[in-house]
Length: 228
Ligand code: SAM
Image 1 (spheres, protein in one colour):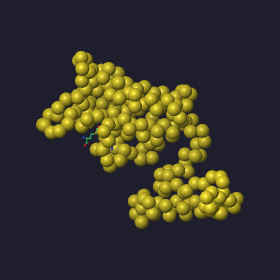
Image 2 (cartoon, protein in one colour):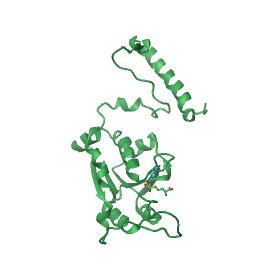
Image 3 (cartoon, helix red, strand yellow):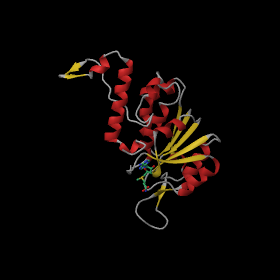
Image 4 (cartoon, helix red, strand yellow):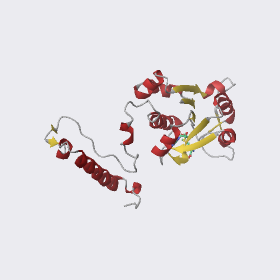
């Protein structure tokens, strides 16, 4: 998979050199390009924003640098992801879907966002998805892009060593994950639930499923089909 990021803060993405995604890049599973939007400006101040038509507070990102940056980046296979609090909420299902794609381009907005014509222009030639990280407003698209790249990247085949660890997770079967424990079996007078030490695989699976149901009911009842 190839991922390109368009941003006025390319330094934000230095962290993609480390951990699992850094290794995936070293191994050539994920190719990453981080592009400074200001490289596509032509004035002395490298201007990317201006006042909004119709008035109102804040600044809007001008379309010209975005147009040039997209022209330099898009291919017929690209999916453009526009992080936006006005987008469709990001989910594990969306991450799974996007992990199948060959090329993703993330457009990191700042200020009051990007001139709408840029998004309409991209949608004329490639698939565009406006995606929200959640019902709150961030200062820019960089953190949302980082979160989406982590969630998508770990689902690209070969990035996580043991693919089984990806299927038994929260949001993979509509439920939250069961609680996890490791050694020692007793720590500060707290013991691991005895069933996990029993060696009885069926009993362990049943217990874990019960825990998933109980946790989902308590924390995220909205995930259950009957909403209970
Ligand atoms: N005026 C915009 C609105 O009310 O919808 C918010 C602009 S926000 C200050 C600047 C940028 O941050 C957005 O263009 C987007 O790239 C990013 N952003 C903010 N909140 C986000 C969220 N919940 N999910 C994804 N991106 C977000």
